[in-house]
Image 1 (cartoon, rainbow, N blue to C red):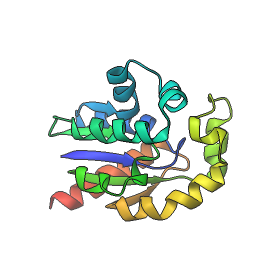
Image 2: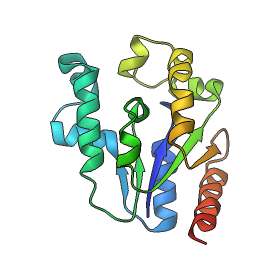
Image 3: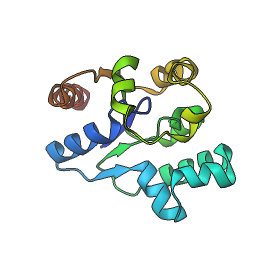
Image 4: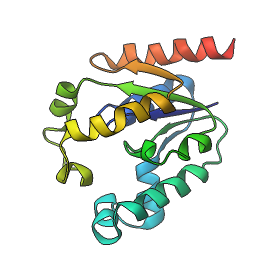
Length: 162
């Protein structure tokens, strides 16, 4: 089964994804890292040189190029901005819902992400929150303990497989 992690920048998709993949003995795929590898450019550079529309196209292409049947996939925060991506996510979609104050703490020393240079975290949240909910098969809080978050996802997966 493919498990897609969606959520805001800084919600913990990569961190939780790595831990979840390790517990499940699945490969871990970071969609943003795959885009950078395929494009031979950093995401910042793609945004700067070609714009968000081109990045979103590359993101969808990368999503469709996943061959692994079993994998944990950390998606970029904006994957939900293209509604058709939902139909391309053949698997279980987990929305990591994280309080904005916690995200701000996590991103304090982070390099400014492309869209956060133009919009506030609150603006992005307002634009995307309902889209995350629409995409999600389950919503899991990731506000504090990473192990509890991973265990909650695994518990939901077991329910789905019944």
